[in-house]
Image 1 (tube, rainbow, N blue to C red):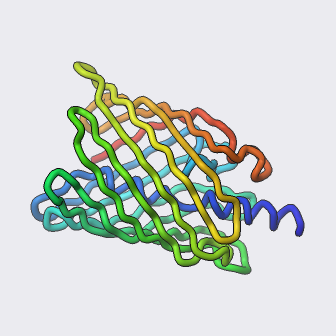
Image 2 (cartoon, rainbow, N blue to C red):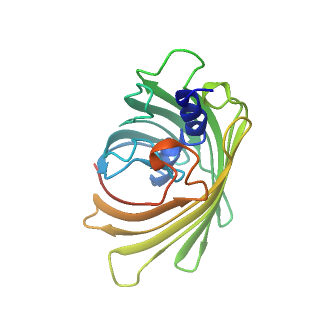
Image 3 (cartoon, rainbow, N blue to C red):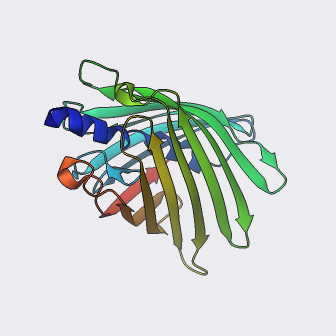
Length: 237
């Protein structure tokens, strides 16, 4: 098995989650609304793995909320897996019903790629089921993602996560973090975690400084599974 094939198999566990973080952040609207976002980061980290070979990221997206609980959106970003791929686009939709104090998020995400290589398809889709609940000033959550066929014909894949966030009283800061586990039929299973501080500069501009890590630093060339501190900024309008 040559180096490129090894890199692609190792990268299988790294492709994906960006889309899951877009519409989930949007507040439900009573009827219909569209919101746009644009941003940049020092690295594109997804589930603890760099999607840009440690280079900076630029992204943009649009989210529609429908009838109070439904949503749909699209998101694009540069990406680099060392195989010719130059960008990613996500198309997603779902609904967010509430059961008492619990808010659910049930949806589907399609991950497509620009200039993807020939051979087994790099694009794929995931089903997701998320739940969040308030705990005093904090918010606690759990999530599961399932793909029947991960990139490069690597078989079924699951990602599990628990997460939490809490605002810092009397400030514009918040603290959040997550612990997750990625499994794939053909690929490298691994654990990942992140912890960061967010700052709401205005109602429409936010910054985030976050530490990412995994337990598989040597799973692929380029240290894409290694620990990393990422600074990002995002504007919504």
